[in-house]
Amino acid sequence: MTVTAIIGVLVSVAMPSYQRYRP
Image (cartoon, rainbow, N blue to C red; front, side, top):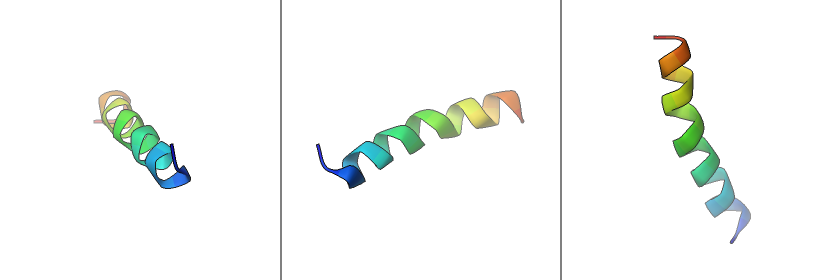
């Protein structure tokens, strides 16, 4: 995986979690 792909996965996982804890 490229760095961009890794960042994309981290963002797509982190964003829903961030919105869940801070609606």
